[in-house]
Image (cartoon, rainbow, N blue to C red):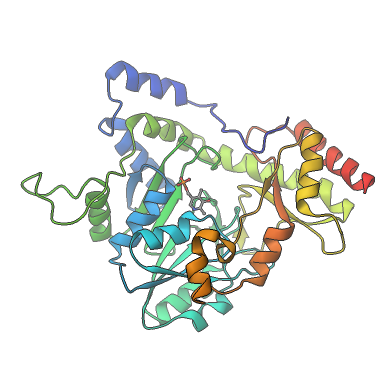
Length: 370
Ligand SMILES: *Cc1c(COP(=O)(O)O)cnc(C)c1O
């Protein structure tokens, strides 16, 4: 079976983790946490790094640090991982979803303004599958309506828009380092910001909002700390981040070259002004084909190729039925179409060219069988 994604652990990961064991620093104390925060912030080009237990807690921290809560609305993409709208809910606010552009699958900026009300406080931009969202348009809208912007960069480590790193456009950038993300710590996350006050607030929120005296808390805090062991893996990963990113891009280039002649799928886009890092190599079956994506994925699995479905849109989630019924969350025809026809192929950074060629061979066999 060719797996859909495996972590690459080719650097100093083991050495640094063993160091944690030898020194006894296995909790969130210890030198690697600070080092990972500094190294990763530097890699993206922002001043402060606030490490987190995962990408979801990073989003929740960002939303709360911006003072968003009950009665507020936050604009989010309809086509994304559910941690994005959920983080808004955790803070007591309401997520308002926006359909995708059909070309890049990202939140369509032309649909944002009609959903802005006097309750809207922020936009969470979650760049999809490696391709940056249209930040020029989104930032112009945010500025015009005085909205905060959180960039969810879980899927775009190292991607750029107009030559600038994703994460450097908004007020806070959130990253996940889950096992399948380009830079990974197994589980982990980070918030980045240039704003000193926001950084301080997030540091307090993630650590119980300890006060002075220590056990007197001025606000409701959380324990979202990252362990030194996870940070040790992260430090090692940042040392060869460029290589981890390039391997995703190389995978994608080979896939696109081999799949284009089949004329069966829509392949991932790459606009002129962006660097797509192809976190996952996603494709959609063209409208002209009658086969369902489930059928296609099952046939590939029988031939030893693992794939994953695209996200269920927020507007189709059972857990969001109440909001859908209230029409706060509207139908999103593009996101629905992406879900119905889209899945991603094995995309890990350690994938060999031979494996990619095998995947395309198996795909060709499935198409020939139809
Ligand atoms: C993976 C992911 C998350 C969640 O990260 P976890 O570390 O799994 O909590 C959030 N947003 C997006 C866009 C993601 O892809």
